[in-house]
Image (tube, rainbow, N blue to C red; front, side, top):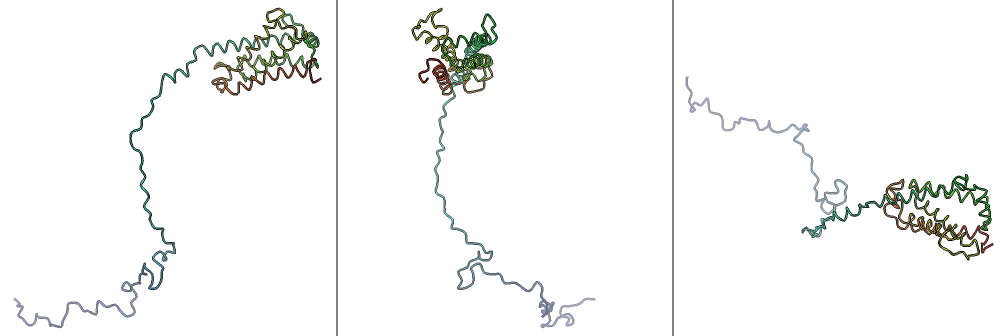
Length: 264
């Protein structure tokens, strides 16, 4: 059975539609997706100076300013090469530290021996009683206390020098003792004994004073407890201060405690 498009039974009326237009219209009480919400304008309402930033209650951003162009010198820069020979020469000390160790230990041991000789009378010494008598003859005051101070200074400075500990101060203390001894020896006969050579001269005390001054200035070297300190590597201002302190202390003790004290 066939049908023809000319069959009036298969022809739809001109007013008919495949979809009813009323199906696309929402109901009067429908509040769904078809309802829209008005989006506020970023330019503000007419007659208002507010902008889109007012929506978030934030101030308007500052106008963008183009940064000034900065020119950098990107060309090659010549770097001075490291002088390896100069670096090695700075750390090369040869036998200098060994010589300082020998000087420091030898002088410290000599001071210790003299101090023990005064306190205990060892190696033919007279002990503290003989030291007090000697100080009295040389015109010193307060010899009971001064005798222990003198012997204690020698022993303490000697031990510190042997250890290489607080070397500038230890050498300055030894220098003060030797300066005081030298002044007392020169003044023992009214200043007339200015001979240099032994046995009546003062070459021994003067030599020890020079050794103490040298150690004060050059430092202990690397073989000692002061090896990591500045006065062992590069002694400078502190060593000069210690030198002046030692000389001043020696002169001051002689002026204040000797019988020839001009202030007394």
